[in-house]
Length: 408
Image (cartoon, rainbow, N blue to C red; front, side, top):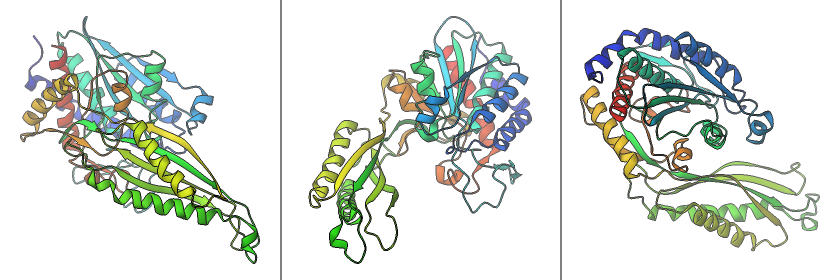
Protein backbone atom coordinates (compact mmCIF):
# COMPACT_ATOMS: atom_id res chain seq x y z
CA UNK A 1 0.00 0.00 0.00
CA UNK A 2 1.24 3.54 -0.72
CA UNK A 3 1.98 5.59 2.42
CA UNK A 4 -0.82 7.72 3.85
CA UNK A 5 -0.82 11.51 3.96
CA UNK A 6 -0.13 11.42 7.69
CA UNK A 7 2.80 9.04 7.29
CA UNK A 8 4.44 11.27 4.69
CA UNK A 9 3.84 14.45 6.70
CA UNK A 10 5.38 12.81 9.77
CA UNK A 11 8.43 11.68 7.80
CA UNK A 12 8.94 15.21 6.44
CA UNK A 13 8.51 16.73 9.90
CA UNK A 14 11.03 14.33 11.46
CA UNK A 15 13.82 15.57 9.18
CA UNK A 16 12.85 19.20 8.95
CA UNK A 17 15.79 20.47 11.01
CA UNK A 18 18.12 18.68 8.57
CA UNK A 19 16.23 20.20 5.67
CA UNK A 20 16.58 23.71 7.11
CA UNK A 21 20.32 23.24 7.59
CA UNK A 22 20.62 21.93 4.03
CA UNK A 23 18.92 25.04 2.67
CA UNK A 24 21.16 27.29 4.77
CA UNK A 25 24.26 25.61 3.35
CA UNK A 26 23.00 26.17 -0.19
CA UNK A 27 22.33 29.86 0.48
CA UNK A 28 25.82 30.35 1.94
CA UNK A 29 27.52 29.42 -1.35
CA UNK A 30 27.17 32.29 -3.89
CA UNK A 31 25.91 31.34 -7.34
CA UNK A 32 25.12 34.74 -8.83
CA UNK A 33 24.29 34.67 -12.54
CA UNK A 34 25.75 36.80 -14.01
CA UNK A 35 28.64 36.24 -13.78
CA UNK A 36 27.45 32.62 -13.73
CA UNK A 37 30.38 30.85 -12.10
CA UNK A 38 28.25 28.12 -10.54
CA UNK A 39 30.48 25.06 -10.24
CA UNK A 40 31.32 25.68 -6.58
CA UNK A 41 27.64 25.61 -5.69
CA UNK A 42 27.11 22.37 -7.61
CA UNK A 43 30.08 20.80 -5.78
CA UNK A 44 28.63 21.74 -2.39
CA UNK A 45 25.08 20.68 -3.30
CA UNK A 46 26.29 17.31 -4.56
CA UNK A 47 28.34 16.75 -1.41
CA UNK A 48 25.35 17.49 0.81
CA UNK A 49 23.03 15.26 -1.22
CA UNK A 50 25.51 12.39 -1.02
CA UNK A 51 25.59 12.77 2.76
CA UNK A 52 21.85 11.98 2.68
CA UNK A 53 22.60 8.76 0.78
CA UNK A 54 21.76 9.90 -2.75
CA UNK A 55 23.81 8.90 -5.76
CA UNK A 56 24.49 12.18 -7.57
CA UNK A 57 25.35 12.36 -11.26
CA UNK A 58 27.44 15.39 -12.23
CA UNK A 59 26.95 16.66 -15.78
CA UNK A 60 29.41 19.49 -16.49
CA UNK A 61 28.55 21.71 -19.45
CA UNK A 62 31.58 22.27 -21.74
CA UNK A 63 33.32 25.59 -21.20
CA UNK A 64 32.79 26.79 -24.76
CA UNK A 65 29.05 26.20 -24.38
CA UNK A 66 28.81 27.99 -21.04
CA UNK A 67 30.78 30.94 -22.44
CA UNK A 68 28.49 31.12 -25.46
CA UNK A 69 25.55 31.45 -23.06
CA UNK A 70 27.16 34.22 -21.03
CA UNK A 71 28.29 32.05 -18.12
CA UNK A 72 31.61 30.84 -16.70
CA UNK A 73 30.78 27.38 -15.37
CA UNK A 74 27.76 25.12 -14.91
CA UNK A 75 27.50 21.53 -13.72
CA UNK A 76 23.97 20.15 -13.65
CA UNK A 77 23.13 17.50 -11.05
CA UNK A 78 20.79 14.53 -11.51
CA UNK A 79 19.58 12.14 -8.80
CA UNK A 80 17.56 9.08 -9.83
CA UNK A 81 15.60 6.65 -7.66
CA UNK A 82 13.49 3.87 -9.12
CA UNK A 83 10.73 2.43 -6.97
CA UNK A 84 9.56 -0.01 -9.64
CA UNK A 85 8.67 -0.24 -13.34
CA UNK A 86 6.70 2.72 -14.62
CA UNK A 87 6.94 6.38 -15.63
CA UNK A 88 9.57 8.90 -14.53
CA UNK A 89 8.56 12.04 -12.63
CA UNK A 90 11.28 14.72 -12.62
CA UNK A 91 11.51 17.53 -10.07
CA UNK A 92 13.50 20.50 -11.37
CA UNK A 93 14.89 23.49 -9.49
CA UNK A 94 17.69 25.93 -10.30
CA UNK A 95 20.61 26.94 -8.12
CA UNK A 96 21.75 30.03 -10.03
CA UNK A 97 20.43 33.34 -8.69
CA UNK A 98 20.47 37.04 -9.50
CA UNK A 99 23.11 39.16 -7.76
CA UNK A 100 22.05 40.50 -4.34
CA UNK A 101 22.04 44.21 -5.16
CA UNK A 102 21.76 46.90 -2.49
CA UNK A 103 19.40 47.50 0.42
CA UNK A 104 19.77 44.29 2.43
CA UNK A 105 19.30 44.32 6.20
CA UNK A 106 20.60 40.73 6.39
CA UNK A 107 23.80 39.34 4.86
CA UNK A 108 22.51 37.80 1.60
CA UNK A 109 24.79 34.77 2.10
CA UNK A 110 24.32 34.22 5.84
CA UNK A 111 20.96 32.37 5.77
CA UNK A 112 19.80 34.29 8.85
CA UNK A 113 16.60 33.07 10.51
CA UNK A 114 14.26 35.57 12.16
CA UNK A 115 10.54 35.35 12.99
CA UNK A 116 10.26 31.92 11.41
CA UNK A 117 11.76 33.08 8.09
CA UNK A 118 15.11 32.44 6.45
CA UNK A 119 16.73 35.37 4.64
CA UNK A 120 19.20 35.10 1.78
CA UNK A 121 19.67 35.33 -1.94
CA UNK A 122 18.05 32.34 -3.58
CA UNK A 123 16.27 31.19 -0.42
CA UNK A 124 12.93 31.41 -2.24
CA UNK A 125 13.98 31.56 -5.92
CA UNK A 126 14.83 28.74 -6.06
CA UNK A 127 17.39 27.03 -3.80
CA UNK A 128 14.48 26.23 -1.49
CA UNK A 129 13.16 23.69 -3.96
CA UNK A 130 16.48 21.83 -4.05
CA UNK A 131 15.44 20.95 -0.50
CA UNK A 132 11.70 20.63 -1.13
CA UNK A 133 12.26 18.00 -3.78
CA UNK A 134 15.16 16.19 -2.12
CA UNK A 135 13.35 15.76 1.19
CA UNK A 136 10.07 14.80 -0.49
CA UNK A 137 11.99 12.02 -2.23
CA UNK A 138 13.68 11.02 1.05
CA UNK A 139 10.27 10.76 2.72
CA UNK A 140 8.97 8.51 -0.05
CA UNK A 141 12.09 6.32 0.14
CA UNK A 142 11.87 6.02 3.93
CA UNK A 143 8.18 5.14 3.75
CA UNK A 144 8.90 1.97 1.83
CA UNK A 145 6.37 3.12 -0.73
CA UNK A 146 5.26 0.53 -3.27
CA UNK A 147 5.22 2.87 -6.25
CA UNK A 148 5.18 2.19 -9.98
CA UNK A 149 7.88 4.35 -11.49
CA UNK A 150 10.87 6.53 -10.73
CA UNK A 151 11.72 10.00 -9.44
CA UNK A 152 14.53 12.18 -10.73
CA UNK A 153 15.90 15.39 -9.24
CA UNK A 154 17.12 17.84 -11.88
CA UNK A 155 19.23 20.49 -10.13
CA UNK A 156 20.36 22.94 -12.78
CA UNK A 157 22.26 26.22 -13.11
CA UNK A 158 21.05 28.32 -16.03
CA UNK A 159 17.56 29.62 -15.26
CA UNK A 160 18.68 33.25 -14.97
CA UNK A 161 20.23 33.08 -18.46
CA UNK A 162 17.39 31.21 -20.14
CA UNK A 163 17.77 27.54 -19.19
CA UNK A 164 19.32 26.28 -22.42
CA UNK A 165 22.31 24.77 -20.62
CA UNK A 166 20.23 23.73 -17.61
CA UNK A 167 17.17 21.61 -18.41
CA UNK A 168 17.78 22.29 -22.09
CA UNK A 169 21.15 20.54 -21.81
CA UNK A 170 19.76 17.54 -19.90
CA UNK A 171 17.15 17.02 -22.60
CA UNK A 172 19.26 17.76 -25.69
CA UNK A 173 22.04 15.45 -24.52
CA UNK A 174 19.56 12.65 -23.73
CA UNK A 175 20.64 12.64 -20.10
CA UNK A 176 16.98 12.47 -19.13
CA UNK A 177 13.62 12.01 -20.80
CA UNK A 178 11.00 12.18 -18.04
CA UNK A 179 7.31 11.47 -18.49
CA UNK A 180 6.16 14.34 -16.25
CA UNK A 181 7.84 17.28 -14.52
CA UNK A 182 7.24 19.57 -11.57
CA UNK A 183 9.38 22.72 -11.62
CA UNK A 184 10.16 25.20 -8.85
CA UNK A 185 7.26 27.39 -7.76
CA UNK A 186 5.41 28.78 -4.76
CA UNK A 187 3.19 27.10 -2.19
CA UNK A 188 -0.08 28.93 -2.66
CA UNK A 189 -0.73 28.34 -6.35
CA UNK A 190 -0.06 25.69 -8.95
CA UNK A 191 1.22 27.31 -12.14
CA UNK A 192 0.07 25.75 -15.39
CA UNK A 193 0.90 28.60 -17.79
CA UNK A 194 3.36 31.43 -18.12
CA UNK A 195 4.52 34.04 -20.58
CA UNK A 196 7.15 33.62 -23.20
CA UNK A 197 9.85 36.19 -23.71
CA UNK A 198 11.67 37.79 -26.64
CA UNK A 199 14.96 39.63 -26.13
CA UNK A 200 16.27 41.68 -29.03
CA UNK A 201 19.49 43.67 -29.24
CA UNK A 202 19.22 46.76 -31.47
CA UNK A 203 22.41 48.38 -32.71
CA UNK A 204 22.14 51.81 -34.34
CA UNK A 205 25.27 52.78 -36.27
CA UNK A 206 25.98 56.36 -37.29
CA UNK A 207 29.12 58.38 -37.95
CA UNK A 208 31.10 60.34 -35.39
CA UNK A 209 31.81 64.04 -35.78
CA UNK A 210 32.92 67.01 -33.72
CA UNK A 211 30.07 68.41 -31.65
CA UNK A 212 30.87 71.86 -33.06
CA UNK A 213 29.92 70.65 -36.56
CA UNK A 214 27.38 67.84 -35.97
CA UNK A 215 26.05 68.01 -39.53
CA UNK A 216 29.21 66.30 -40.73
CA UNK A 217 28.30 63.15 -38.83
CA UNK A 218 25.32 60.82 -38.47
CA UNK A 219 23.82 60.98 -34.97
CA UNK A 220 23.19 57.41 -33.82
CA UNK A 221 21.51 58.72 -30.64
CA UNK A 222 18.97 60.70 -32.63
CA UNK A 223 18.10 57.65 -34.72
CA UNK A 224 17.92 55.45 -31.61
CA UNK A 225 15.60 57.96 -29.97
CA UNK A 226 13.22 57.74 -32.91
CA UNK A 227 13.19 53.95 -32.59
CA UNK A 228 12.69 54.09 -28.83
CA UNK A 229 9.79 56.51 -29.19
CA UNK A 230 8.16 54.13 -31.67
CA UNK A 231 8.65 51.19 -29.33
CA UNK A 232 7.12 53.07 -26.41
CA UNK A 233 4.13 54.04 -28.57
CA UNK A 234 3.78 50.37 -29.52
CA UNK A 235 3.97 49.41 -25.82
CA UNK A 236 1.10 51.75 -25.00
CA UNK A 237 -1.20 49.66 -27.20
CA UNK A 238 -0.33 46.28 -25.72
CA UNK A 239 -2.74 46.69 -22.79
CA UNK A 240 -5.68 46.19 -25.15
CA UNK A 241 -4.69 42.52 -25.48
CA UNK A 242 -5.42 40.41 -22.36
CA UNK A 243 -4.76 36.70 -21.91
CA UNK A 244 -7.68 34.46 -21.04
CA UNK A 245 -5.43 32.64 -18.54
CA UNK A 246 -5.87 33.93 -14.99
CA UNK A 247 -2.74 35.64 -13.69
CA UNK A 248 -1.11 36.36 -17.07
CA UNK A 249 -2.51 39.78 -17.97
CA UNK A 250 -1.32 41.66 -21.06
CA UNK A 251 1.87 41.52 -23.12
CA UNK A 252 4.63 43.82 -21.89
CA UNK A 253 7.63 45.58 -23.38
CA UNK A 254 10.66 47.00 -21.58
CA UNK A 255 13.94 48.52 -22.74
CA UNK A 256 16.30 47.54 -19.97
CA UNK A 257 19.83 48.19 -21.26
CA UNK A 258 21.32 51.03 -23.35
CA UNK A 259 24.87 52.12 -24.12
CA UNK A 260 26.62 54.31 -26.65
CA UNK A 261 28.55 57.42 -27.49
CA UNK A 262 32.20 58.34 -27.26
CA UNK A 263 32.31 61.61 -25.33
CA UNK A 264 30.16 64.62 -24.57
CA UNK A 265 31.68 66.64 -27.40
CA UNK A 266 31.42 63.93 -30.06
CA UNK A 267 28.41 63.02 -32.18
CA UNK A 268 27.65 59.43 -31.10
CA UNK A 269 28.58 56.87 -33.71
CA UNK A 270 26.85 53.88 -32.13
CA UNK A 271 24.01 53.21 -29.69
CA UNK A 272 23.04 49.72 -28.56
CA UNK A 273 20.01 48.77 -26.50
CA UNK A 274 18.19 45.59 -25.51
CA UNK A 275 14.47 45.11 -25.19
CA UNK A 276 12.30 42.54 -23.46
CA UNK A 277 8.89 41.69 -24.96
CA UNK A 278 6.73 39.32 -22.87
CA UNK A 279 4.58 36.96 -24.94
CA UNK A 280 1.21 35.77 -23.60
CA UNK A 281 0.15 32.15 -24.25
CA UNK A 282 -2.28 33.15 -27.00
CA UNK A 283 0.48 34.78 -29.07
CA UNK A 284 2.79 33.07 -31.57
CA UNK A 285 6.41 33.98 -30.74
CA UNK A 286 7.46 34.25 -34.39
CA UNK A 287 4.59 36.64 -35.09
CA UNK A 288 5.54 38.76 -32.09
CA UNK A 289 9.15 38.99 -33.22
CA UNK A 290 8.10 40.02 -36.72
CA UNK A 291 5.78 42.63 -35.21
CA UNK A 292 8.51 44.20 -33.06
CA UNK A 293 11.04 44.13 -35.88
CA UNK A 294 8.50 45.92 -38.12
CA UNK A 295 8.10 48.70 -35.53
CA UNK A 296 11.89 49.12 -35.40
CA UNK A 297 12.25 49.10 -39.19
CA UNK A 298 9.52 51.68 -39.71
CA UNK A 299 11.10 54.05 -37.21
CA UNK A 300 14.58 53.46 -38.63
CA UNK A 301 13.33 54.41 -42.08
CA UNK A 302 12.78 57.95 -40.80
CA UNK A 303 16.56 58.22 -40.20
CA UNK A 304 17.95 56.55 -43.35
CA UNK A 305 21.51 57.82 -42.85
CA UNK A 306 21.89 55.56 -39.82
CA UNK A 307 22.24 51.80 -40.15
CA UNK A 308 20.21 49.57 -37.83
CA UNK A 309 20.93 45.93 -37.02
CA UNK A 310 18.64 43.74 -34.90
CA UNK A 311 19.77 40.49 -33.27
CA UNK A 312 17.69 37.96 -31.40
CA UNK A 313 19.21 37.22 -27.99
CA UNK A 314 16.46 35.02 -26.55
CA UNK A 315 13.17 33.55 -27.66
CA UNK A 316 11.43 31.68 -24.85
CA UNK A 317 8.08 30.19 -25.75
CA UNK A 318 5.05 30.54 -23.48
CA UNK A 319 3.97 27.63 -21.29
CA UNK A 320 0.43 26.60 -22.12
CA UNK A 321 -1.86 24.35 -20.06
CA UNK A 322 -2.39 20.86 -21.49
CA UNK A 323 -4.72 18.04 -20.40
CA UNK A 324 -1.74 15.98 -19.20
CA UNK A 325 -0.35 18.91 -17.19
CA UNK A 326 -3.78 19.53 -15.67
CA UNK A 327 -3.74 15.96 -14.30
CA UNK A 328 -0.57 16.85 -12.37
CA UNK A 329 -2.10 20.18 -11.39
CA UNK A 330 -5.24 18.50 -10.05
CA UNK A 331 -3.18 16.24 -7.80
CA UNK A 332 -1.10 19.16 -6.53
CA UNK A 333 -4.15 21.34 -5.88
CA UNK A 334 -5.89 18.54 -3.97
CA UNK A 335 -2.91 17.81 -1.76
CA UNK A 336 -1.90 21.44 -1.23
CA UNK A 337 -5.44 22.37 -0.23
CA UNK A 338 -5.44 19.55 2.32
CA UNK A 339 -2.03 20.43 3.77
CA UNK A 340 -2.51 24.21 3.88
CA UNK A 341 -6.13 24.09 4.97
CA UNK A 342 -7.29 26.51 2.28
CA UNK A 343 -8.18 26.25 -1.41
CA UNK A 344 -5.07 26.11 -3.60
CA UNK A 345 -5.90 26.61 -7.27
CA UNK A 346 -4.04 26.67 -10.57
CA UNK A 347 -3.26 29.84 -12.49
CA UNK A 348 -0.72 31.49 -14.78
CA UNK A 349 2.11 33.92 -14.09
CA UNK A 350 3.61 36.68 -16.26
CA UNK A 351 7.17 35.35 -15.78
CA UNK A 352 8.96 32.80 -17.94
CA UNK A 353 10.75 29.77 -16.52
CA UNK A 354 12.69 26.60 -17.30
CA UNK A 355 9.38 24.71 -17.38
CA UNK A 356 8.87 25.72 -20.99
CA UNK A 357 11.90 23.68 -22.06
CA UNK A 358 10.25 20.46 -20.90
CA UNK A 359 6.94 21.48 -22.51
CA UNK A 360 8.69 22.11 -25.84
CA UNK A 361 9.71 18.42 -25.78
CA UNK A 362 6.08 17.39 -25.27
CA UNK A 363 6.54 16.61 -21.57
CA UNK A 364 3.67 17.71 -19.29
CA UNK A 365 4.95 20.19 -16.70
CA UNK A 366 3.60 22.40 -13.93
CA UNK A 367 5.24 24.60 -11.29
CA UNK A 368 4.93 24.10 -7.55
CA UNK A 369 7.27 24.42 -4.59
CA UNK A 370 8.09 26.31 -1.41
CA UNK A 371 7.32 30.00 -1.15
CA UNK A 372 4.72 32.67 -0.37
CA UNK A 373 1.77 33.82 -2.42
CA UNK A 374 3.71 36.11 -4.74
CA UNK A 375 7.28 36.77 -5.83
CA UNK A 376 6.89 40.27 -4.37
CA UNK A 377 6.11 38.83 -0.95
CA UNK A 378 9.24 36.67 -1.21
CA UNK A 379 11.32 39.71 -2.23
CA UNK A 380 12.47 37.59 -5.12
CA UNK A 381 15.19 39.40 -7.12
CA UNK A 382 15.13 42.14 -4.43
CA UNK A 383 16.83 42.87 -1.11
CA UNK A 384 15.97 40.68 1.90
CA UNK A 385 14.68 37.71 -0.08
CA UNK A 386 12.90 35.48 2.42
CA UNK A 387 11.13 32.17 2.92
CA UNK A 388 8.69 31.23 5.65
CA UNK A 389 10.05 27.95 6.94
CA UNK A 390 6.63 26.52 7.73
CA UNK A 391 5.80 26.90 4.02
CA UNK A 392 8.91 24.88 3.19
CA UNK A 393 7.80 21.99 5.39
CA UNK A 394 4.25 22.01 4.05
CA UNK A 395 5.30 22.25 0.39
CA UNK A 396 7.65 19.30 0.90
CA UNK A 397 4.76 17.20 2.18
CA UNK A 398 2.61 18.29 -0.77
CA UNK A 399 5.28 17.21 -3.26
CA UNK A 400 5.74 13.84 -1.53
CA UNK A 401 1.98 13.21 -1.53
CA UNK A 402 1.61 14.25 -5.17
CA UNK A 403 4.47 12.09 -6.43
CA UNK A 404 2.93 9.19 -4.51
CA UNK A 405 -0.38 9.83 -6.27
CA UNK A 406 1.23 10.09 -9.71
CA UNK A 407 3.13 6.80 -9.25
CA UNK A 408 0.62 4.85 -7.16
